Structures are given as C-alpha cells and as structure tokens.
Image (cartoon, rainbow, N blue to C red):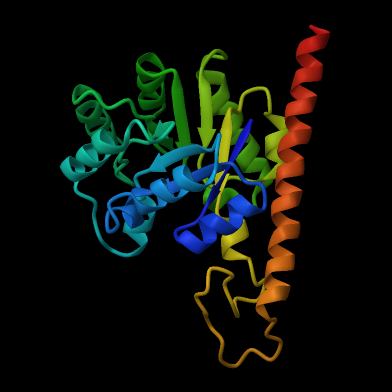
Length: 253
C-alpha cells in the first residue's frame, strides 16, 4: 500500500521530501497556474518519487469554480511521462457526467483512474471495473466519524470490485479502515498533515499564516515543524507496518 501525501506549495513539497516522503499527490486545480511546477519540483529534487496527478475537482467545487476538461486532457498529455498515475476529472454529484468525462479522456488516449463516489449507482462501479485495472473511490469524507456506516459502505464496494483490481481511496488515512481492508487497498491519499501542521490553525509550515488573530496559544514555526515531522513519521511507519503485514500474509499462503 502506498500513502500519497498532499500539498499545494513548493515549500510544502520540499518539506515532505526532506522528511522522507516519496509518494506525492498533486492537484491539477493548483498546478494549472504554474504549468506543472510542483511536478517538476518533485522530479528535480527526489529520486524514485511517485506522483499521482489528481484533477482537483473537489477543490474546484469548494471554490465554486469549474475545471475545463479539454484543458485537463492536454495537461495530462503533456505531463503523462512525468507522473505515475492520473485521475479522471470527476463531476461531483453527477455520476453519469463523470462517466462521460472518463470515456472522453480514455478515448483521447489518456490512461486515467475512474472515480466512483458514495451514493452513485453501483452499475457505474461495475462499468469502471470492466474498463480499468485501477479504480478510485471517493466521496466518503462525510462518513469519517461514522465507522459502522463507513465499513458497511466499503464492504459493499469491495464485494463488487474484483479482487485482482487495484483500488485507491481518496482522502483516507483512517488507520483502522486501512488495516481492515489492507488486502484490497492499493493506495490512499490525505492532506491531514498539511492541514493540521500547526494543530491550532495559527500557522502553516508552508509559510502561509491563517487565523492568527484571537488565538491565545500560537506556536512558532519550529514547533510546527516538530509536530509535522512527528505526524509524517507516524504515517510512514504505519505504511511500512501495513506492507510488512501484507508480505507476511503472502508468505504464509
């Protein structure tokens, strides 16, 4: 299992890499302005790194903007040799539109992961499993505090996905979930370390201050770095532990 770390700034990417991270998820929504600046940053600074290019559809939705599919296709075409995985441009809340987007991208010769979302018709998931060897699952963020519902949802999903297929979970670092389904999960990603780097929203290690007023217990940048290093190390150790457990199970078969 690979855990992809998410950041949207060059300092954040460099920071993660210096802490030992080698799996990066980069969002086209932020990359389109620089023409691939973060992708180049990873390739120029860290050997053996893996890059997962996401469309950034969720970020666009939260900013009440849209992503042009033709422009995303061209970006993927230009950068496909620099990245290891690419995600389809999903249309949140519209499964059929996501399917049309996926079909258009694959027809254009772009090898992308289709993304199935919580609440969509399971026929869409079955369609993606017929078309692709690697599928992504998203839309489960709202269930992160409802473990029983979350487990039931993924049980239904994994009952449909053939065992030989690879599966990526968007926005997941629920370690109990990862342990429970480690034999079915190929990769996950999360921005939890970036978003919680200061643990009180007073300072981001990437250099972007947020909500600095009216917070009585601000921590300085060195303390932020120490907390972030601890969180990154913990996640990398869990990734290692899961993979060692997987190897042990395979060896016992």
